[in-house]
Image 1 (cartoon, rainbow, N blue to C red):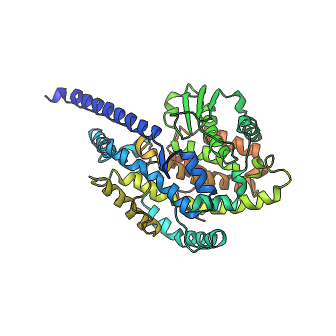
Image 2: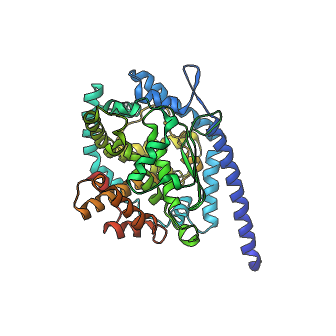
Image 3: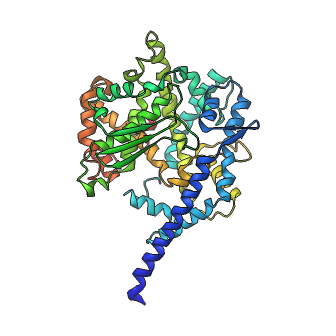
Length: 432
């Protein structure tokens, strides 16, 4: 029997993997086809986002925000917890204690990389609370912000984000931006599919069809300035994977998703910088500069609010959960532990975030990408003795290409981070 054990185990793993894929596809379809109901009418995710960022009525914003929770039960009824349990079982068959350990090992991350996050966010919490209180008083004349207030505050700080633009001409301004950093995206074989249609996924993606050769970008955009952030982010992914050697198969398999998200976030965040926005707000540059400067302060400290969602994404696999209420209580508990905030509704908003279903144990990549982005800018500006990377964009692009993109598969993420920064990974690049 022992001689056949590897075969049987391999077959069991393959069969379970196929079941996981089937259920993931089924729940992904549930997500893609779901439309929340607001005041008796179907409403899309972009429409909810528009209400949250522009509607003056807090009660309407609250209803729109909580409408996102309507997907929770369909996901649960469709087998969400079954999917979580199957992933844990799959991890155990592969020699790991749980799916979190399995996923981190696949990403070549140490298991203790998140161990200090609760402590570090508590250190930054007083500063975050003060800033949020100051903005709440300034823009909403109240002391405390609710989840449905954040996007509205963002639009109040920088109304330029909701400025009308013609997205049919999206490529030219993005091309100009990348050219300033030495990347000619017109020579990349990247295909864009960016306008909405029925049953199309409402999220932005970059699909690398063939490394260094063929990339596709999928999005759903409206004629609003803020949509450039999504397209520049996804183009960052495409640029990363278009500038690696397709023949380095082994090295390419080691490219960290965090590094890729860091580069994507870096380019996506240029939507807030004058290197990009000047051609959209001609004649009002100083006004835009002040607004986007304040917005950057707001965004940076609020980026820490991603931590509870990241921890929730992991804790789903570390706790015995049997009901939809178990999931909700877990999320409320994490919110309280990290942000010291009370329950904001009868049911929390979580299922609409596709990563819990289709890309588990991945959300940390975006936040750690932000930390990486801040680290890269700090290292470069200190080395060049300048105040901003915008003073030397071509040189910064070369630094990205030579020191990050082309070597990103040679080292584990934590090793690459330390090699470039001289320090272990830390949230201090965001909190300080």
